[in-house]
Length: 82
Image (spheres, rainbow, N blue to C red):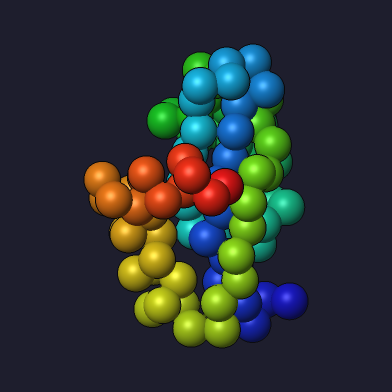
């Protein structure tokens, strides 16, 4: 389903307080990259699991939603709902 762009929230299995929000077109490959330690920002809290993934047909809408989730009000929204 490469026609979709996914916004995802990861939770660390080793550090329950750690989470990461990102955007990709290949969810399983991106998770594998996070868990292999290839992403510097997430390498210290491996392994990760997908907590939430939302698909968008529009890459622009996906990126806008990712940006929102990384804002102060978006982090609070994610904390309450995801």
